[in-house]
Image (cartoon, rainbow, N blue to C red):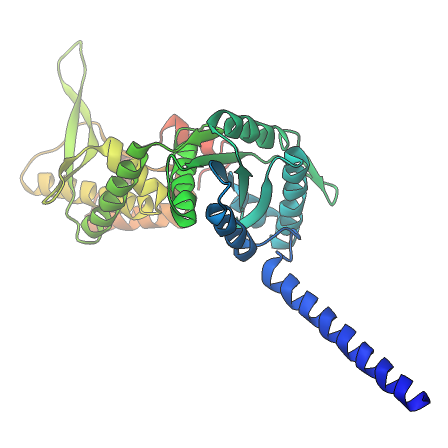
Length: 339
C-alpha cells in the first residue's frame, strides 16, 4: 500500500511539474517579459477571435507610439528605458480600466483594442491615454516627460481583417505625428499620401547617390544701390518619373528618413564646385553664398572638418560661404553648442 501511495505521489508531482512547465511556456509565448502585458502574439490571437465572433459588430483599434523615446534610451540607457516603458504601461492600463485590452506591439509602441466602440468613444479613450502620462514619470529617482501619438482605425468602416486594421492604425499614427496631434483617425487619403512618400523616398535616395539634383542661386540685392551683395543656394530636384518635386515635399522626407545629412554635404560640395567654376570663367561673386544646413548636420562631430575639406578641394575660402539653419532646426535642440 505504501509503495502504491508513493507511486501516486510521484505521478502527481510529475503531472504538477508538467502543468507548471506548460504554464511557464504559455507565459513566455504570450506574455511580454518587460511590461507583463499580453505580447504581440497574444494580442493578434485575441484580435482574430474578436473578428471571428458573431456578436462583434464594431471595434476600435488604437496604436500608440511614444514620442522621442529613443532620446531616453540614448541618454539614460536601455535598462532605465525599459523601466520607463513599464511605468508607461501601468499608466495606460490604469486609465483604460475595463474599457479596452492593452498590449505592447514593438519597441516603444502599444496597442489597444476596444470592442463595441465607435469613433467618438475611441477618441475619448485616446485622450484619456494621453492624459495618463501628462505628468512627468518618476523612475529610479529620475524624472521623464513622455508624450504619445495615437492612430485610430475602426472595424468594419476601415478594414475587414486584423492586419488591415493594424496597418491603417499605423498610417493614422504616422499622420498624427506629422501633424503634431495627440490622436488621428484613419482616412482613405492617408494611404495615398504614405504611398507617395515611399515612392519619393525611394527615388530621392537614388538621386542623392547619383548626384542627380541641382542648385539654383537666388541673388541678394542691395535695394538702395541695386548691386548684387550675395546669393543663396537652393536645392532643386527634377525626377524622370515624378517630374519637378517641391523642396517642401522632399526635404521633410529626407529629414525623416535619414538622408538629409548626405543631401546637405552634396549641396555644400556642389556650391563650392560652382564658386570654383565661376572663378575659372572670370566671374567673382560679391558677398557670400548662403547655404542651408539641416539641424541633423550640426549633430555631426566632423561637420566642420568635412566642410573645410570641401572648401580646400575647390580652393574656396571659407569666408566666401555662410551657413544658415532654420528656427525649427535650432529649437530641435536649443542647448546644443555648435561644433
